[in-house]
Image 1 (spheres, rainbow, N blue to C red):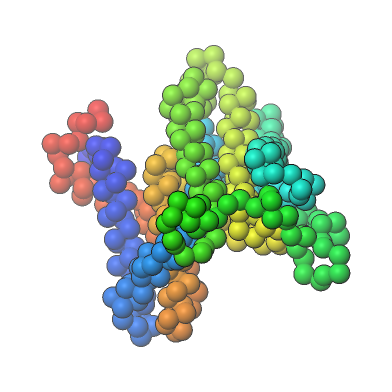
Image 2 (tube, helix red, strand yellow; image 1 turned 135 degrees about the horizontal axis):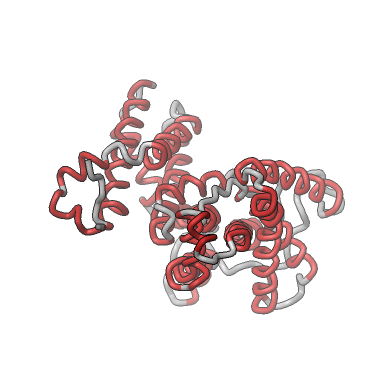
Length: 365
């Protein structure tokens, strides 16, 4: 049976159906623990988008997930599965911290480009060794990138305990950045325009994430290098036959993914915390995998999926506060069901949907 769908159904309708199925099953889980699923859903939605403050937090989390989702998407188009976004983001945070601490008295317009360069360079450099091992030695990129996550965590711990820790404190965190190098918060930028909104961690990095998505879209679909990446992803043997340097494409795609993961540190380290914390990534690198899968590895889909997971993250916190019996573990279950239906089981409804849309099937032929 032909399971082709038109683009609008494949990229919008099918994920929506999968999301509804995940939420329906989540409702059964909530019902099993003795709570009203509709009431819980109302609290979750209100906690995510029910106020200006809630929206600010949702978009703040979504900003990080956009970066880590792009970190997965670029290598995926080359047939590679980058699981190392967590470690690459940690290295990006280290690079940003060194720049901000060293140039604390400089104006932001000078520091920001250098911080972006440091985040990109450190994230890409951390992805380079797994990329080289895959291209030159055939090492499995999933294994090597996961291993590098643990190495990055150990390196970050050592730096915060023995090198970057502020004098006289016991908490494993760096000294605070000078106020001049903080990214402007969204409420400050909107306030300058006469628009009053609640203070949240949402900051200028949100626009950087959107810009990164546009650049990735241009690179993958509108440059000859992006075309080579997609050809390699469809078949290395065919790419070699066509004269494409497959090893170079593998290294470039993984390093670009690492660069995007490194940029996630701009949002958390430079835009919100204004210092380097031990667990600042909060497993955002792994959430980026789900974001990329749900977004079909397209920047627009990734942006929408990132906002969904940002809403789940923020709304889940409010849910556990308003209904104490629904602890954070329940939210993790809901997130897991969304990942399950939008990732591993994304094609469960494809054939049924294709039968309902017979006239639209030839659109992709």
